[in-house]
Length: 161
Image 1 (cartoon, rainbow, N blue to C red):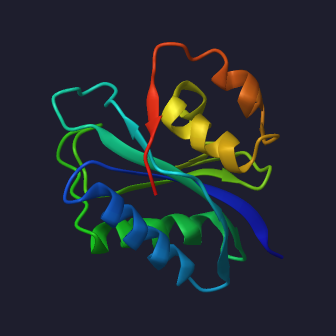
Image 2 (cartoon, rainbow, N blue to C red; image 1 turned 135 degrees about the horizontal axis):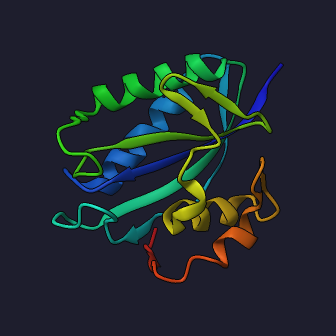
Image 3 (cartoon, rainbow, N blue to C red; image 1 turned 180 degrees about the horizontal axis):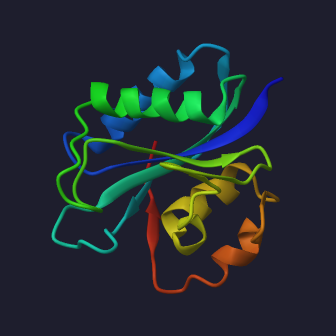
């Protein structure tokens, strides 16, 4: 049975928009998976570790028959294929792929927490998410658009296509 899933993408190294388009293309090649929607790309300032370039962010909606664990492993393999290195927490990266929602399920396993534990604090996740799914409800947290209204200290700029 296919599950509706949302994946957040971010990059700030090596032509970020190009890296994100490559990542989306690779997600489309995953078995038993198809792309449903892709948000605009947004330019955002880094959070946490700020001594780095601005990020390009987006969210995609997919339908997949992969389990959450299988999908996570596939996303990590795509990150690796695109040169992702994990040297500084919240640091610069060629690509970051976060499984933010897996249907309406709540998952709390080693290295796999869904909904993503900080998505409700990140405008760079909620803005593109609500662009493609304006009425989405985040399990245990409520409507994404209501959560977005509480974030007032982060700005995004929609990038031209």
